[in-house]
Image (cartoon, rainbow, N blue to C red; front, side, top):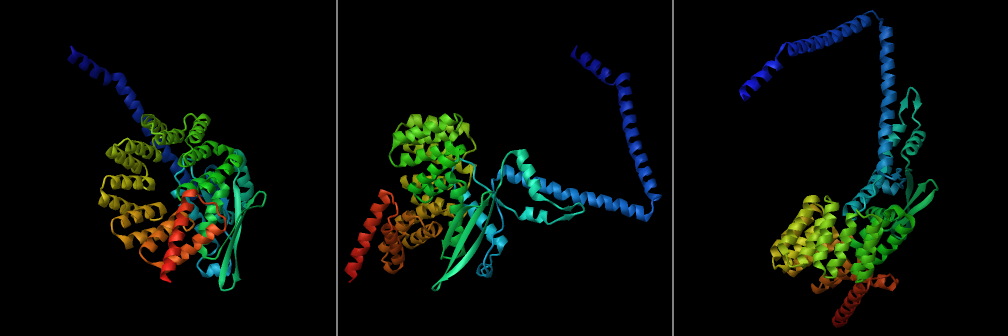
Length: 488
C-alpha cells in the first residue's frame, strides 16, 4: 500500500503539468539571459557611436557622482556611529614644543589621552556600559575633502544627524602648556566642552607626559561619567570617600545612571559594615529596574555578608539568569559557594566568569585566594603569574601576587610585584603602605624613604583616609621612626 502511494506521488511529481512548468521556467530564464545580452550589446553599440569627448564627459559625470557621494556616505556613517555610541568627541589637543620633542604631536597626544581612558574602561568592573570617547580625526579628514559641490559642511550635517537621532555630541577641545619652576618643567592640560565653553578639567603634573595623561584621563572620566570613575576609585584604589562623592555627583547630575550609582553605593556601604543601608540601596536599584541583574548581585553580596547563604545563592543565580553574559555574575556566586565551604564549586564558578571575560581580574584573585586557603600555594602563585601576564596593567593583581610571593619565601620577587602595583596606581595609599612595609622588613631603608615622605605628606595635608588605612599608616610611621632612632 505504501509502495503504491509512493509510486503515485512520483508519477504526479513528474507528470505533464510539472514538465510544462519546468520548461516554462527554463524558457523564462533563457529569455532573461537573452534580454541581458541584448541590453549589453545595445550599450556597447551605443558607446561605439559616441565621440571621445562625449565618453570623457560621461566618465567625468560618473566620477563626480562617486566623489561627491562617498564622502557624504562616510560622514553619515561616522557621525551616526559617534552620536549613537559616544556622547563625547575629542578634538586634537594643542601641544607645546617640548611635548613635540618628546614625541607627542597633537594627534598622538590626543590618542594617548583616549588610550588612557580605554585602559580605565578595561579595568572597570561596573555593570554600567563604559563611556567611549572618540576623536575627530576622521571627521576632520572628511571635512577637508573638496567635492565638485564644494567643501563638505560637516557641522551642518552633524547637526542634522543629531536632530534625527535625538542625541547631542559633546565636543571637547583643549591644550597642553608648560612652564618652568626651578629645574622642573610643569605641564598643564586643560579641556573645555562645547556648547557652553565649560572647563571640564584643569590638571598639572611635574612627573612628565605619562603622569599627565593618566591624571587627566581619570579627571575627565570623573566629569563625563562619574559612576564609572567612582567604581575605579573604590575597586582599584580603595578610595571609598572619593567614590561616594562621585556617586553623589552621578545621582545629582546624571539621573539616568541612578540604578548603577545606588547599586555601587550598596557595595561600598556593605564593605563599611552598614548592611541595612547597603540592602536598602540594593532594593532601590531593583525597584528602579526589576530586571536589573546587577541589583540581584548586590543583594547576594549583602546576604552573603549577613551569612544568609541560601538566600544569597538564590539572588546570585537570579543575577546570572537576568544577565548571563555578565562576568560579575558567576564570580559573586563563587564567593557565596566558597563561604558555604564548597571550594571546588567556587573555583569552577570563578573559571566560568573567566570564560565570559578572560580579562576579568577579580576572578583570578578569587581563584588564587581560594587555592591559598586550601594550602595550594604553588597553584595559587601559578594562577597569579598567568593573570599578570594576561593583564599586566592590573595593579590589584600585582599587589596580591606580591603578597603571595613574600608569603612563600620569594621576598625580592614579591617586593618587585608590589612595586609594579604602586607604579600602576601611584595614588593608592593601600599599595604604598604594602610596598613600604615590605621594604622596611627587607632592611631597605633608603629605598623606602621617598614612600614614607609621601605618606607623611598625605596625612599632614588632612586628606580623608579610611580608618583602616590610617591605622596602618600610623603603625608604619611609628615603626619607621623606631628603626631610625635605633640606627642613631
